[in-house]
Length: 178
Image (cartoon, rainbow, N blue to C red; front, side):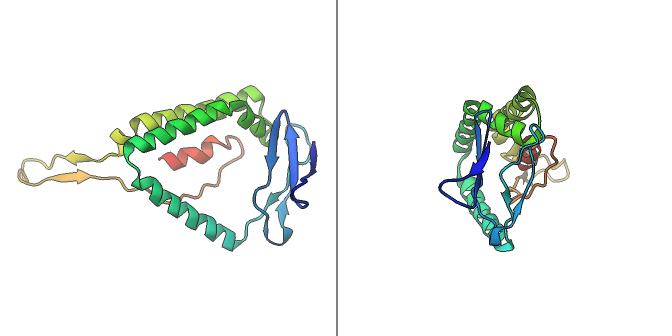
């Protein structure tokens, strides 16, 4: 059921199969994108349209978060990724319900093809990131026996993803991990 939010008169709240979806950012001047659930045909909460200033602010916050993330050691990054995986597991049904509501997938498909696959992907990244991204020495051939070289990987920084509708969770997270 869709209803007006009690704490924010302009916002909408939608409940379906136990999932509650709320707008968390108001668009400038009350501009919203309106859509309906392909699963039910009922209106979804309107999505606020961000202003250019709001987008710049979000990108700046993301840059700050990336700097903080890159300052963490491998062990702490691994610990946080595994906590994220566990949070996905703890909220699997809730996340899947939102996907069903917004995307029209069956609950089983949303759980398996979106959330569980993401959990597996995050686990893999947590366990292999140091080995894959940690840098390594490169052999320079016999012509340079006294030289040394290394390959180091720098983070991409802020990544914007425009994802297709069919895999809304995995299509967003996969590029972030590459």
